[in-house]
Image 1 (spheres, rainbow, N blue to C red):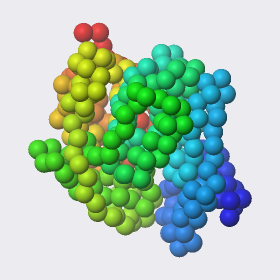
Image 2: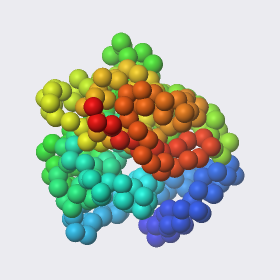
Image 3: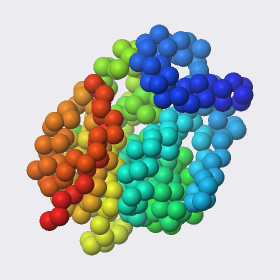
Image 4: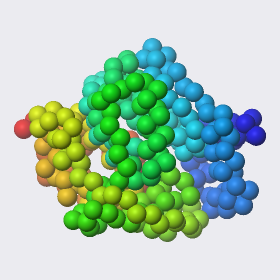
Length: 284
């Protein structure tokens, strides 16, 4: 099963064009569900994780899920990401929607092994534990991990409902059905704590430390988070943000951040239903 799982991983993630086409095909999703392909791969990776030890930086992380393969492709497989972050490697960060903690590994790698300082947040407890493992492998004392929801529809409440998707990459506080492939999603409803990021950052790092990079990948909660915590933006240098059409538009994101003195510096992905944008703060 290990060889089969790795062969499937190479097919799906080894070629950007192939993987993108597969993601858009409803019959592929139906077939994968019928034959429990994701479950097979995750069982194999959980038993036989792929251990990455990156050259030069010596950053370590463990691939224990199908989804982590997709996340590492996002950062390590995209030359544009490397170009953006190598030019001015962030030392401090906030990672919203951290999944298995690949983003801080990427930041440490482009910084040639320098230990990052920051906060990782995800509403999926299983993903937070995977991220905790990867942080622990590197011995980073100033990377702090939390399970909870940011940008809640009801921020005044201490808990909120959250929906786990069949793949952790699509989990959201919105049980949306409009997917790129058209294949319907089956959601699992859970309850998670609501979190206020600026309060957490100030409590952990004090009022003066700047956040060099704020990464936002929270499946439709991006605008509610930005509106609720707009005061946080004054201490942020750059923003890496994924937007989703069922909740907002590229134009709304750009307009809001321009009003808060951020300039769109790079479009990393520009798809009909989502996109990834990189912003830099203007001098104040």
